[in-house]
Amino acid sequence: MRNISAWSIRNPVIPLVLFTFLLAMGLLAFKRMDVNLNPDISFPAALISISQPGAAPPELEIQITRRVEAAVRSLNGVTEINSTIREGNSSTFVMFEIGTPIDRAVTDVRDAVARIRADLPDGIIEPQVQRIDNDDEPIGYFSAESTAMTVEQLSWFIDDTLNRRLMGIEGVSVVSRTGGVSREIRVELDPVRMQSQGVTASQITSSCARST
Image (cartoon, rainbow, N blue to C red; front, side):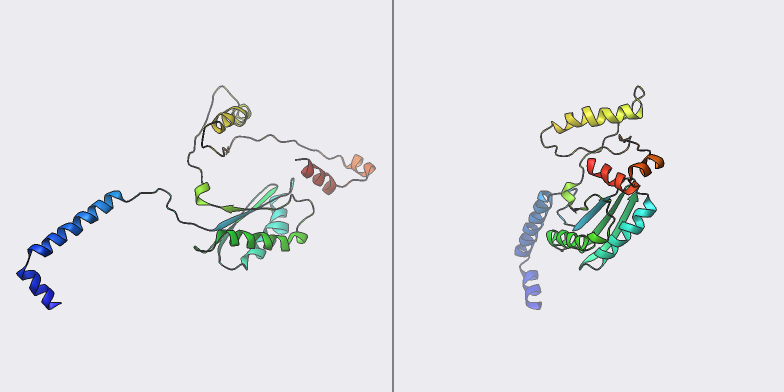
């Protein structure tokens, strides 16, 4: 090291040329460096969605959500579990360690849900397990409001007209609406007629689920 330092002091031109060359190459590489808003980093995760039309959140939490969380908690590589419950639907988000193969993670989650399928209520729609990819995140958000339409009319306009126009644009694969109102059918049960027909509320719920 001392010999190199002494030689550089005696011959300063070559070290200065080398330093200038390396500095220029570094600046050139920095300018050519790609900047990506969403870097190519894979966060392996899966989403479990289970629907039971008409079921209240407390009922879903006890009969579905807790059982699903217990089933996936023991999977290898799980780092985080978050669940969201609303009327008629339970969603559980499962995050795995970075580096876990996403296909294996999703398969493990499906197998875990399949093992507890017999313990879940009979009236549920078949559980759905889907992989979560960063590349699938929305690339645009738009808001809409109108003083000439009701909330129902505006929601229908977005779903029926605007949605189809956006889907007609090349490269657009999915358009979804958040907020507004969704169409629904209210079913009011008559206990007397139910008793005369020999049907239960669970049977009616199952029949409605199969019709959706």
